Length: 177
Image 1 (cartoon, rainbow, N blue to C red):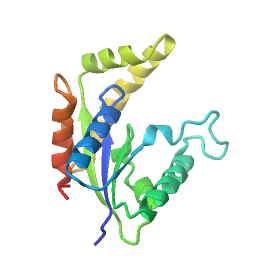
Image 2 (tube, rainbow, N blue to C red):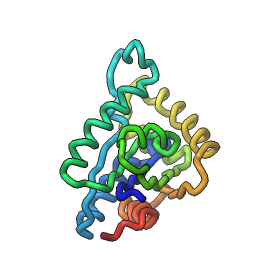
Image 3 (cartoon, helix red, strand yellow):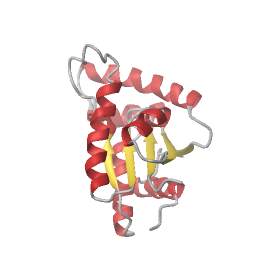
C-alpha cells in the first residue's frame, strides 16, 4: 500500500483547471491537510521541443520528478497535478513520482460547454492564438470524454462558483486530514 496520493485534474482549455486547483489547495490548507500543487502545463513549456522528445513527454516527466523529489523530501505525500490530459497519463505520473509503491491516483475531469470555454478563453487569449486554443480545446474535450479511464469523476464547471467546483473535486479525493 502506498502513502502517496495524487489528484489529477484534467480538462479542456478554458475549463478552469488551474483556478480550481488553486481553490482546492485553499480548501486543503483551511482543513490543515498537507499537500503540494504542480501546474503540469508549465513543465514542458520549451521551444523548440527537444529534438529527441518532440512530444515533450520526457521533459515533462523529468521536471515533474525534480519538483516532486523536493516536495517528497519535505514529507509531502499528497499532490494536486493539473494538465489538460493528466487523467490519460497515469504511467507518466507513476514514473515521475518513482515511489516504492504505486501512488493512489484520483482522476477528475472538469467539463464545460463550448460556449463556456469560448468565453473563458476569449478573456485570456488574444489575436491568432484564440482560434488555435478554441480548436484544441474542442478536440481535447472530445478526446478526454472518449478516453477517460473508468472511475474518473466528472465535475461540471458551467455557471458554478470556483469554490463549489473545488468542493466537488475535494470530495472525490477523500482527503480530510
